[in-house]
Image (tube, rainbow, N blue to C red):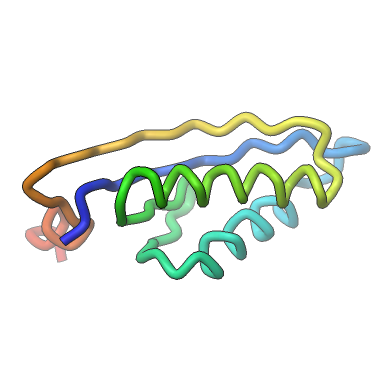
Length: 96
């Protein structure tokens, strides 16, 4: 079982003030390619795994957005960590 949940909202600055959706889509592509379990929500994406693994995904997301042309990125991150294990399903099953 995973020990960490990490939710992230990326707020990329764009070159000419254009819509940031393409940048957010690129960030989600990085998550998808990582192989970690994740869920996309309207305002953030939550990943499940080990802390070091998830922080590496965040680093790769930022690099991908810079490569796409974003001059700067702000990320709002929430981390839940439990040595005994934690999962998205376990926290939300009573609502499904």
